[in-house]
Amino acid sequence: MVGKFTFIGLAVAALGVVSAPAAGGSLGAPDPDPGTASAGPSWSDEFEGRAGLPPNARRWTYDTGATGWGNGELQRYTSSRANSHLDGRGNLVIVARHLQGSGRERGSYTSARLTTSGRFSFRYGRVAVRARLPRGQGLWPAFWMLGTRFPELDWPFCGEIDVMEYLGHQPRISYGYVHGPGSMAEIGVGGENRSDRPLPDGFHVFSARWSPSQVSFSVDGRVFRTVERASYPAGQTWAFDREMFLLLNLAVGGGWPGKPDATTRFPARMKVDWVRVWEAGSQAPVGGDRPEP
Image 1 (cartoon, helix red, strand yellow):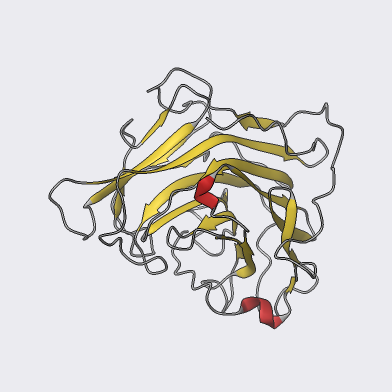
Image 2 (cartoon, rainbow, N blue to C red):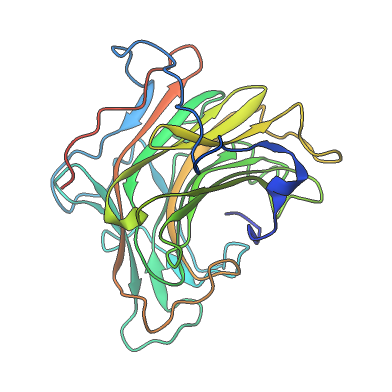
């Protein structure tokens, strides 16, 4: 999501740099139980609180502005409660809005980009989000991580792990990718998951398991891609050995999703039930799902 056009349409998987899904479906084997059910996450936000409150400032801060964010994005990120707030039912809501009477140029949309930079970071373990994604051309929600030396160490040298990226005009597809220095930095290495039903129809758990030797991506507990250090493409640098912080955002437009059109409905909402991290040595299953609001 930083300083890149992620043209996933290029068939990176064909290069043999990732483990393919199991035969017979888009999803592979279950993500194995990494610990006892009683072991809770080492860091989490369950987004409990009164409706209208901002997200917890001890856990999250904001990136703000209308710079295009390296991808030609159209939104202006704000810290306004109009763009991010608790709904009083255990969810964070990130809201993308189209300013009344405006066109489809940069700055005519507002949204939010939350980050744990300076609040929380970790190295190795399992990270997951339970979220309900929006539908619509030009919408680009993501849950991802950057190395803590960013922006001192610029992208892609800082390393990036995209736990979940999604395009609102492809409601059955989500992506998990890593980005590091080399000729494939903008494309990334990873793959896509194709769900049986549209993702906006309900909440789903998007997860990454990160170790010194690999990063594996799963949806609803089923692994769909594993990127192996041992088979990382020649000439590319494995940039995933340092601590990373978390980001949650809902972008509008950009080189990958394209602009919203007349079919895109605003305000558009990404609902986040929880974010959880099990650091290496203290991991437990991703679970605790509750009924959808």
